[in-house]
Length: 347
Ligand SMILES: [Zn+2]
Image (cartoon, rainbow, N blue to C red):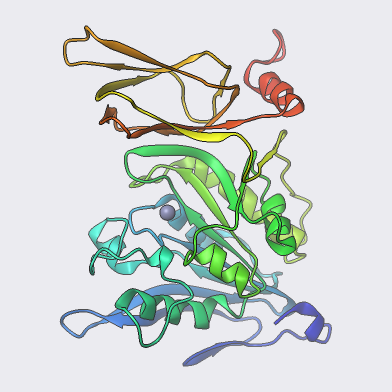
C-alpha cells in the first residue's frame, strides 16, 4: 500500500482476512488468533484508522510481552484520542498482542511459557505461539510500510526510553531517527522478534523500550506519544511540524562499549542513580550489602556513560544484572552534562 502505488486523492481500502476498512473509516476489530482450552476464541483488539487521503500504512503494537503495559496506553491514545481526521494513509493499532499473557499479567504466553516475541513471523501449522504470530503477522504487519513495537523493561528492572533498531537498514534507521529518542541501540535484533522479522519482511520496524512492567508511567507515555507523532510527521501522514528533537542523541553500535554490570555477591542493593543518569568512570553506581549491613560491596562505573537500565527489585544473586551502562562520545557527553546539570541561573 505504498503511497506511490496510489493515485493522488484516492486512498485504498485496508484489507485483512475477513474484512476491509474503506478510506475514511475507523474500525475497532476483535480478531481471532487462537482458541482457549474451552474452545472460545482468543481475540486481539485492533483499531484500523484508514484516512481518506493516500499515504503510507504503519502499525503500532504493544504488550507482545503480556505484562509490559506502558505501550498499551500509547497505542490507545493514538487510536482513540488523537484527531486523525486528516490522516494520510492508514494506521493499524494493536494495543495488546499477547492476549493470554496480558490476562495472566505475565511476560510469556502461559501455554508452555512461549515468548510471542520470538515466534514471528509465525507459521500456520506450528506451535500455538507461532500460529498466533502468523495470524498477527500476515494480516496486520505485512501490509504495512513501517512499524513501532512498544515494550518496557523486564519485571524488576526499569529503563529510560530508548529505541532498538537495525540502523544499518535504511528504513529502520529512518523510523528510529524520526522517533527522536536520546539513545538508539543498534542491532539486527533477536531472531523471531517482531522488529527483526518485520524489518526482514520489508516492513522496517523499531522497538521502543520504556520504563517498567505492570505500570502506566505518564512521563514515558507522553515521551513515546511525541515520538509516534514525529514518525507520522516524517512519513507525511500528519500535517505537523511537531518533529521532536531530543537535544542529544547517541547511537550505540554493536561493537561500542555497552554492558550489563552484574552482581558478584548476593545481597541487597542500594542503587545510587536513576535510569537515564550520567555516571563518570569510577563513580559508585550502587552498593550491595549483607543482611547485617556489615559487608559492603561497591560497584563502580567501568567507564563514563548513561545508565539506560537499572534494577528496581533490590535483591540479587551473584550474576544478576544491576544496570545497563552505555558509553558516550565526548560531544554527546558534553550535551548530556549540560542537560543534567545546567549552569547556575539557567535551570
Ligand atoms: Zn518486551
